[in-house]
Length: 624
Image 1: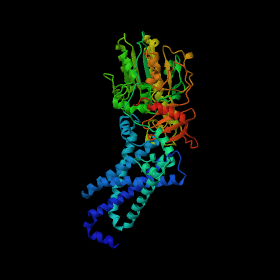
Image 2: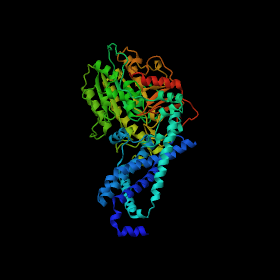
Image 3: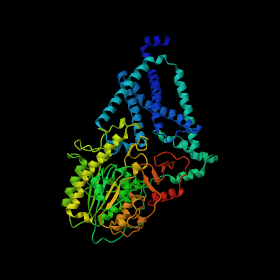
Image 4: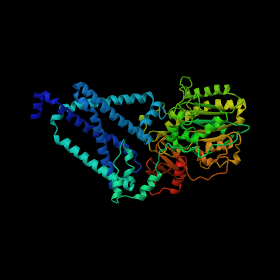
């Protein structure tokens, strides 16, 4: 009471630098608590909640200390604001604190659907529409949330300035002490866990954004407190990003075919294997009946970057970074150009993100980057019309390679006047409203309608091949770059790039055209992969005699059948070894998790190290 009276009688004291610094300190403390509550959302997606003392202690102390550290960093940024006039200071502090909380909230939504945190790559993809396309209502919800949080922060600052004199100094001191203890405990636990590859702790750290707890393996080794065997196994499984390539291992040699075959890739973004049928995609399905359909085909990735990469290079998506640094064109494209193929590359989305203009198509002159979006029928209709014009003007004395990359299912989109094939469906996709309890059938019906729409457009291309008689000399490959999960596993995955289960990595695959004799091809239930496309084409259609092993990790689908036990697939930062029964998911530094086909942990299983060794050979074969 006396302190309140003293402050009212001495207003200059209230606005002293020391006073404003104390207010900022309490603002940090309150926002740290708010951040901890928000961060609890991450733990809804723990594959297994830790039940052991070490795992639980690390989860609790790590979250408490890390969220406080992040809030404190924001506080440090705000120190210059203490020299500003009152209103300007309040606005600046409320704005920056609000943006930080909004970023954390958005990150929890991103993590809920994709199981990774916001990073520069993710931001580029979101802003370009490559991962999700936000509706107007979604943006309005985001703007409303920002306004509400800003108002709450502004009021909180005013409240703290008014009530601070009544607060006890001991509150801040006790809180600081707890943070210090939590930092020691969480980092100490992680030091031991990292030295012993204790995954209930080391796997937990990935659930928090920008969380890099301490390791000290050298010191632990010095005193003999380390499990060297387990560390060696983890290191062997880790991904090493190398820019020194040895690709191909030997020069590509061969003879030019006397009668070259036209080649066409019809690729649909985010195409699920279970929607390649007479109902959802009738035109493509009908055309595929003249060739071979492979029912157990997997993409080389759960995202566009790694899926398309494997399709054109015939090697794992883990080589992406080396290829982009060196602007290394795939030997497949090099061979097409050497044989004077006319390249018609038509994509709805931009080929600059991911950077295919610097990888797969780095040597293609006058590359069409993407659709402009100015055609009434949309970007998929635009690419089709552009291809038809190009095809009419082509040199008929030269063979052609066509790449048609459709996009509509990626954003669950189709024109407003397109008949709704499947009802009921969502009127629009609002990712902020999606949860594990959402009715997935509504989203699935919208997705299937978008697939049906693309199929109706592709019909123009197929009809053109038939009308011109070129179908007889055109090898058509029908597939998708990756799948699209619609919460199939009931883990709140809505999209792709989140896991390696079938909805995200299993895609349609059909080959139609010359030399495709269905009775002489592989059994359609055998595991096949995008990595098989390049060797099949190079050996059988482009006259290449170089050993497949020297430029690809795939197999010749027109050759002797290979009975595979597993397939390698990858994402931006992980790779997966997929078998008919389980999935071994391996992170960048070698941490691993064995999951069933529904993405549930199989904690009683050990990795099949024969599979791991073979996968590591594929991942490293073309590194120097």
